[in-house]
Image (cartoon, rainbow, N blue to C red; front, side, top):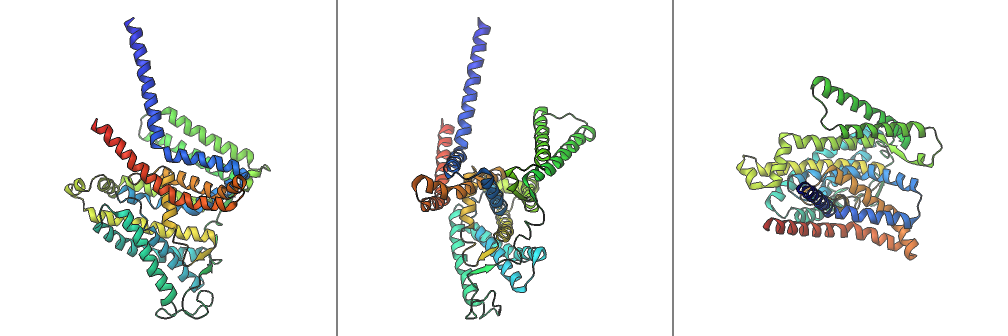
Length: 432
């Protein structure tokens, strides 16, 4: 009888723990769950073919993911969401205008923009970091206002200084009056210079990367068994990884020569490799001494200072890295877009990147690669389907366009509100 009661109690405890875990999971991921539901409804209402949506998503992910990933390190360092990545975007655009003026085309032109943008981004990031160190606790609003101020300076330079203080006689770039850069610049010289290096359909990409993934997995497993001479601890996880690799490779091989309509989904392979390298960089830097300093400063600046960490220096480094990455991300964005809006392309970079990161489930104190990728996918799914969904539901595509703007700004307010509410709930639990 006692054993039966013990078993019943054990089952009840397991059920409670499972229920508590599910509740915690839903509580922590309420924002991405909400937007997943909204995306599914939008896809259904828009009646767009799935291959078209997938192709657009791949294009937008390649175009925007790098900039969103540039936000992670300042969050890790406790500086919140860095709206000042707008300054990094400006650095990228300055380099692009210079390369177009010098008429350097193709991949060499793109690489030169990366090289030229870096010192500008480092300088902007250093000044931004110094300012944010003066406004500890108010970094997000400071970085947002700084972005507006920098935009004014940027417009002054390119509307008034070009052709007067800065000599430039280029009919392609300069306005007919000889002063100021044109509002729209065609980037044919560097358009798709990164994307078109290698471009495969979805199934060929699956086959190639599935095969490479399997080889790497087998190599890592052999290394652990032979060199380290210890067993893999989690065999179930390893089995799932192997199964995933087999499915990717087999699906790609079977469908590679088919006439599936999903073959319209084209993957810019090199662009995604670059994004993958940034993901690896974010993982690697966390494991370094500098990454541990970022984490320590982010958790408690006072403890970090007592531990001998130069807090202000670490915070400046975090902002410099973020600004440089944002500059490179803006170059990737514009080479895909093919057109530079001189006075507008950078304006919404910070807002859209922050919104995408928050939709993925990030907060002002926690952001991961998964949050960035998931958020970019969800945010741009809504951008793709909302105009037609609005037209089909309410008879007006303008409603869909309004909804896109509403999502971009609204999600930031909602996410920050939910974050504050979560903190209050957790504080009450600790008080009990």
